[in-house]
Amino acid sequence: MRLVPCPNCGPREQAEFVCLGETTLREIYLRENAKGPVTELWWHKHGCRHWLKLARNTATNEFAS
Image (tube, rainbow, N blue to C red; front, side):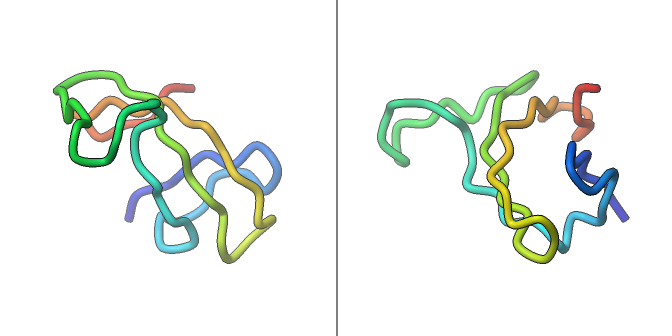
Protein backbone atom coordinates (compact mmCIF):
# COMPACT_ATOMS: atom_id res chain seq x y z
CA MET A 1 0.00 0.00 0.00
CA ARG A 2 1.43 3.37 -1.03
CA LEU A 3 0.30 6.53 0.74
CA VAL A 4 -0.18 9.77 -1.16
CA PRO A 5 0.17 12.97 0.92
CA CYS A 6 -3.01 15.04 0.58
CA PRO A 7 -2.74 18.50 2.21
CA ASN A 8 -6.51 18.52 2.88
CA CYS A 9 -7.18 14.93 4.03
CA GLY A 10 -3.75 13.74 5.21
CA PRO A 11 -1.97 10.61 3.89
CA ARG A 12 -4.35 8.38 1.90
CA GLU A 13 -4.08 5.19 -0.15
CA GLN A 14 -3.06 5.58 -3.78
CA ALA A 15 -6.32 3.89 -4.89
CA GLU A 16 -8.21 7.09 -3.93
CA PHE A 17 -6.25 9.15 -6.48
CA VAL A 18 -5.94 9.51 -10.24
CA CYS A 19 -2.51 10.50 -11.57
CA LEU A 20 -2.49 12.65 -14.70
CA GLY A 21 1.31 12.47 -14.99
CA GLU A 22 4.12 14.98 -15.35
CA THR A 23 3.22 18.66 -15.26
CA THR A 24 4.87 19.83 -18.47
CA LEU A 25 3.77 21.89 -21.42
CA ARG A 26 4.85 19.17 -23.85
CA GLU A 27 2.52 16.68 -25.45
CA ILE A 28 1.87 13.31 -23.77
CA TYR A 29 4.11 11.39 -26.19
CA LEU A 30 7.03 13.80 -25.59
CA ARG A 31 7.31 13.35 -21.82
CA GLU A 32 10.80 12.60 -20.55
CA ASN A 33 9.92 9.72 -18.20
CA ALA A 34 13.26 10.43 -16.54
CA LYS A 35 14.56 8.63 -13.48
CA GLY A 36 14.54 10.91 -10.46
CA PRO A 37 12.36 13.72 -9.10
CA VAL A 38 9.36 14.85 -11.17
CA THR A 39 6.34 17.04 -10.47
CA GLU A 40 3.01 15.32 -11.21
CA LEU A 41 -0.63 16.31 -11.20
CA TRP A 42 -2.90 14.12 -9.00
CA TRP A 43 -6.67 14.27 -8.45
CA HIS A 44 -8.10 13.10 -5.12
CA LYS A 45 -11.10 11.39 -6.68
CA HIS A 46 -12.48 9.64 -3.58
CA GLY A 47 -11.64 12.34 -1.05
CA CYS A 48 -11.57 16.13 -1.17
CA ARG A 49 -11.78 16.11 -5.01
CA HIS A 50 -8.95 18.65 -5.33
CA TRP A 51 -6.15 18.67 -7.89
CA LEU A 52 -2.72 18.37 -6.30
CA LYS A 53 0.72 19.11 -7.71
CA LEU A 54 3.05 16.62 -6.00
CA ALA A 55 6.79 15.95 -6.28
CA ARG A 56 7.65 12.24 -6.60
CA ASN A 57 10.96 10.48 -7.11
CA THR A 58 10.46 7.94 -9.90
CA ALA A 59 13.57 5.98 -8.88
CA THR A 60 12.35 5.29 -5.32
CA ASN A 61 8.60 5.89 -5.90
CA GLU A 62 8.47 8.16 -2.83
CA PHE A 63 6.78 11.53 -2.49
CA ALA A 64 8.73 14.57 -1.32
CA SER A 65 7.59 15.94 2.01
